[in-house]
Image (tube, rainbow, N blue to C red; front, side):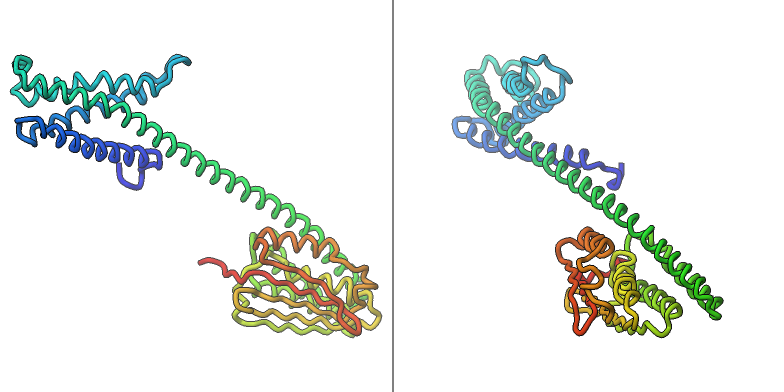
Length: 358
């Protein structure tokens, strides 16, 4: 199995095994060194016997950690593991002496070796169960941390999915609003019987070709937004050539910045519908896009009828836009609507300057 196919659970299991082995050898070495004090045997021999006992208790602890798969409800697995460790200690001590004395049991007739066995068993029984309990506590704490992290990741994913669903819902609300406005503009153009009908329809087709793909896009750029707004305003200028003048100024460094689709179009449509259209004299629309440090500032101003005659407030389109911006950028956004003198409205939009990755 290569490294790329190792699952997180397998990696955790391997890490746990390595840690247990290192701890077992370290603690067994310490016990073995202490046992060398009353022993006349070579130090390495005494330490190796402690290693055998340590490995045997680790094997018993790991075995009963998973076997049997099911236990009676009244019998806790940690009790089984501690009992397994206790039982393993004396057998492991006898095995250690058997392995280090030539593979026979003649050592049971040697008083010094019997004393060594008893010391090894006593130290094992004194320390091994507590070490096992400590390992289980740490294991449960690690499991609880992993579970908490898993729950947090799952909650984060659910929150992201909820935000995506909310964004799609708001996007769906924008689509019919946009399409109905476009159809209304088509009807107005047909009703006027303009001799420039062919030019108007060509501009309208170009406008729709630029706008429709953005309806389902997750994000757009200010460059695309400004191109779409320019097409829209040129179309509106054809509809009312004597009543609409517009200017567009944009910081070149702000053009690659991302924003929700149809953000600027929503602001400009709002200015045309509620500012310029109701005014007998028409008016002027100025669009200004500037990059200011880590923020992008967008201003759309019109010299239309103003807030009082337009009804005041944000309205459905701007309220929806504000919510879409909050979902896209979080709390670092603002949308302000103010009246300008002698008449007209300015909408200022501020959001974090974020470029599209890649």
